[in-house]
Amino acid sequence: MIEKNNKILGTLLFVVLISCLIYLIFFTRKKTNKVEVNMIELSGNNLLSENDYLTSADLSDIAADKNLSLPEIKDRFDKHPYLENADVEYAGSGVVKVVLTEKKLMAIIINNGEPYFITNSFEILPMLSNTKFGDLPVISNAGTLNNFAPLSIQKSEDIVEAFKIIDAAKLTNTEISKKISEINLRNGGDIVLTLSGIRPPVIFGRGEEAKKMIYFEIMFEGMNNGNDLVDNSEYIDLRFANEIFLGKSQGTGLIE
Image (cartoon, rainbow, N blue to C red; front, side):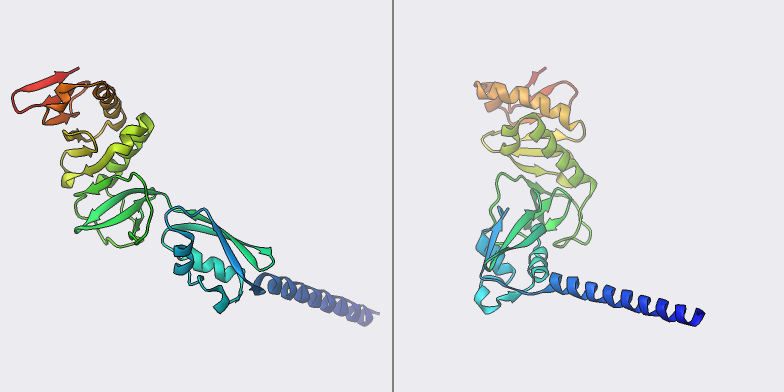
């Protein structure tokens, strides 16, 4: 009786194992099955055109390689330096839809005379041709950056300071943030800002980014209403508590 029960138990165990094996094979095959791709539809692309992304992923000529798996298509897009993620799904009738999530560009950074992008996570990206980007400030003279290369992380104290200025400007006045054309970190010295449409440079100094930006916004509103004192100044100095100094070739003005 015991021997018979053992045989029955062994048979049942064998059936269960075979069933599990068939299940795994079926679903694994279902996931990795290649599909006939006639068209790839992209969305979420802003930095590069659809054609640029397809070319970079070697997917511009679908006719040459129709039988691709969805994981293979995803992997090709995920390798692009501008992309955080690519969601790929088969929509049927030979159409594959790809939703791209691009990395967020924070600024352009200059290193050894060459421009690169830097993201909000401090990642360095190459500046590819045909890239479309808006009002990004240039970060210059960031000092010595260790192991600087595309896809490296550069989170020095100077760059963190530059990011704080950018964030403070965005939160205070979007028009000011769009006008910031350069953040000169001066290799650890007092930070100097250059703004498009505003002649005198702004000596921003370091620290208290939000407070300084609020004071500068007050001056900025006055400049929009016409302010000859600012126009005739050589520089705007925000380094002093609760005050803005206007440097002039003949004397110094003070706005409290």
